[in-house]
Amino acid sequence: MTHHILSIDQGTTSSRAFLIDHDLNVKGEGQYEFPQIYPKPGWVEHNAEDIWGATLKAIHDCLAKSKIDPKNISAVGITNQRETTVLWNKKTGQPLGNAIVWQDRRTTEHCAELKKQGYEKKVHEKTGLVLDPYFSATKIEWMLKNNPEAKRLAEKGELAFGTIDSFLVWRLSGGKAHVTDATNASRTLLMNLKTLQWDSELLEIFNIPESILPKIVSCSEIYRITQDVPGLPDGIPIAGMAGDQQAALIGQACFAAGEAKCTYGTGSFILMNIGKEPKLSKHRLLTTLAYNINREITYAWEGSSFIAGAAVQWLRDGLKIIKKSSDVETLALQVPDSGEIVFVPALVGLGAPHWRPEARGVISGITRGTTAAHIARATLEGIAFSQYDILESMTKDLGRPLAILKVDGGASANNLLMQFQSDILQVSIQRPVMKETTVLGAAFLAGMAVGLWKNPEEIRKSWREEKQFTPKMSSAEVDAHVQRWQRAILKA
Image (cartoon, rainbow, N blue to C red; front, side):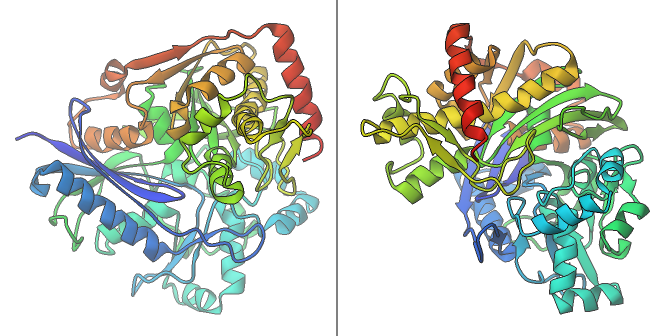
């Protein structure tokens, strides 16, 4: 019997499902988008039932396209948007209101107040994170304060919190498993990075009862089996789990300290493997858990930009200068450069290393000669410059420049963006054959738990490069670009 892994990639705008065999052949795939909800400026929500429904539809389409009997699925792996926060009733399994998405900024003022109270240093030392509305803790606190039913259920011990991985495992297991893996737990502001356990002092700071929290588990083990899932037989091991960026690090086979990857999705994220110790960044990067596999605990530095592909979606849906996202490269290539237009894509604030939730997008340098093509090109350059700021901080922490950056995600297919990224970073860019590295990472984790792959080294041997981009821009041109960027970002 041929063994297959069902890999679920639950993202910010869609749920996807892939069926992958041992040789990394994709035998089937499905994808369904779900609505984005914007109740107020800076607020972003999802309906958790929409997420579950989109996941089931994606699984259905994946299996239909593969024509493979679901009984031949050896395990299920999950990767997910990370900090997005869901509360649900433990007895009924029903969500309490909408999920608050990682992009949501409603707790900005509360984070500022906690900083004034002197909590940021302690939080950073314990979690490797900063006090920012990006993370789950202040989202949970807000939900408990503003939803009377949540508070009532919490007092009765009948309330469950989870990031999306937890919610999916709960549903896939028929409500039998309330767990989260350590990578997702490391994004809540509630887990101690050294012990990999919920920290009582942090729970007190954020006024969160421990009774609502899931059990923290490793990235690769059998958590439970499927039960009562439409379209799937009962009894499939649910066996691998990691937040999307950590899954991409695994899918890119970055298993040695100093290896790094950048994922271009709705936002963009650089993770660098830093080894076995949770070293804190001195340049406003996050320290996070990279993975916990077979009791091997590895950490990473992370820099995140909240807007990457979402900037291109804004050109499509807001400005309507392109019909589909993939049109942006064709439009941008109509001009030789951006005409000194600079776009700072701070549409929901600035992430690392700036951490300015109040910042907003800026387009500078507009003249009568500015065209839609210049705006498109400046958008791609703005995405690349967000990585420049992150990697500058990362190399300062590392003490040496990075030689190679592996890339993945939808926008990594854009050759113009990748070449500019290489130029502005002065770093070689490696793009893999399999660009869906988050999916691959989740599949590897589940497959290792059931013996389909033996260890990370076997995964490393399977990684293949599709294309490499090397710097071509002169240092004078790079300096001119960087100076324009630095002036523009001060206005954001």
